[in-house]
Image (cartoon, rainbow over all chains, first blue to last red; front, side):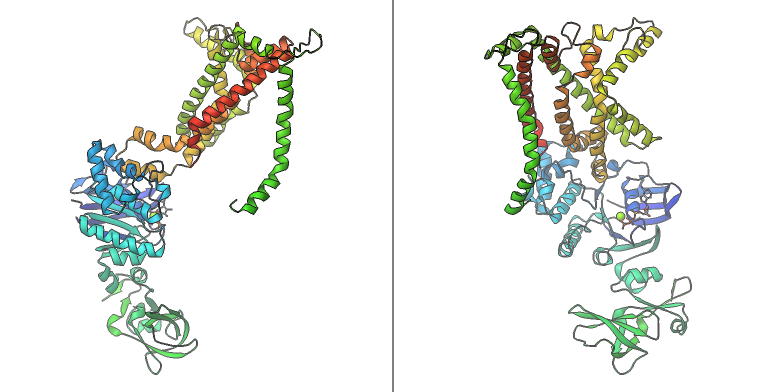
Length: 334
Length: 290
Ligand SMILES: Nc1ncnc2c1ncn2[C@@H]1O[C@H](COP(=O)(O)OP(=O)(O)OP(=O)(O)O)[C@@H](O)[C@H]1O
Ligand SMILES: [Mg+2]
């Protein structure tokens, strides 16, 4: 079990309202990702759910029971911190066993659970080491191990991969996704990396300044962003957003078109432009094209073989069925 | 400091300071050892014949030597206990957000800046004096007979005074260590179901152990040579009940003018201090590496 419900939950630090009242339901077994720019209140929201911060208003319900006043240890949630927060003077084994020891479990039962967790996480060879003698990825796994042994109703991750290098991050991302499939437990995952959000989530919650901008599956968010903020935040590279007369032609204040939904041609097309910087990724090439349509250069995706030089004249054509239209408030127009 | 060249350079650079310090230490030490084998009394100028181990023999067999050793031990141990336990408690208090935090922190540090003679006299005359002292007045206000601190519990009184002076040092070091404790570790422990006492024992104390070791090591070195507080309060008395090793050496060499005997005591003190240092390093020094 691990259904979590937030009803009108808000949080203020002194007179600063970091999170205005918000509602959110997280279903049992779901992998939910909170994503948003730095300082938007992702960690705060996670800590409210964990009980490490008191809510300023509203209710947190876990599995149907009001948990607003329940202390963190009694909520049945396990948290993996960004800094891992391992206990430096304890061996890996003692670290993982710590929650069990606090729960007053017998030594034999502790050992068994620790061994199981270590096997799942490939930590068996490191059980007698101290955290200081482990690599970043191994520490991460110990932190996850410490969470797993408690068999929590839900796991809370606060940017667990941000201290790892790019290659390791991809690996750990897969491991966490796999863990979720195997344990089938609710997971709430905070990140500001939209790639992590897109690849891991069943459901993404996009936050800005403590306000939920949109909740939905990765594909929903990609295909039908509710407003310009979500449109710009989800997808890489960013969606091109064009204002002014070009947008007015489509009865909108802003139109958006993703780099992968623009066709590029040397002979004819809707917008004429000049090629600026190109970024070659091998599989793809991203061209930054300055057009008359907007002041900002538009990003266009082409296949890796496409060769265009700096200053070449090209014509861009947006695919009409992939055009997003937004009104003057930045909200999506259907 | 990894390469051979940089190590050699480091050694060369540091040598003037080391040689100076070595000379500073060796010359007085050699003289003390030399004097300790002479009959050298300032009031009986009979020349200074070499007498071998005689000074040591008389110093060690003097009944006040045994008392002084015991007093030194109790004094050092008592002050260490009070300052470490008190220091941890003060650090815990100072760590919480409260009104007037800055001022309170400075006030806690203040006793450390008071000179030993001054604090000894202040305690003696203003606090512990049975007639004029505050404790005496308080006792009288409750109708109890005032305690004559330096008469009834002289060693404990000295311990209290010295603890008062060293508590800020312990507090400061432990408090600094406490502030460097990662809050996420405490939160993780809280989520793991650890109540405050468990968090204190399993997270805070191990984190503080290194700084507590430092406090114990540094304080022991200074506490072995406590002198001013005794001189201005009890003069080692009543009898020899507050005479520690340092004070005994003072009595031999400067009250009895027996330089040879005093030197012998000094050498014994040096040896004891080194034994204690090695013992402490062995016992708790392992906290300092890693
Ligand atoms: N203890 C606090 N006191 C006052 N303000 C706070 C406190 N904790 C957080 N804030 C404020 O709340 C806002 C949200 O902080 P939060 O840590 O939740 O951001 P975040 O989304 O996790 O950002 P990041 O991605 O950088 O971790 C920030 O503006 C921050 O300054
Ligand atoms: Mg954060």
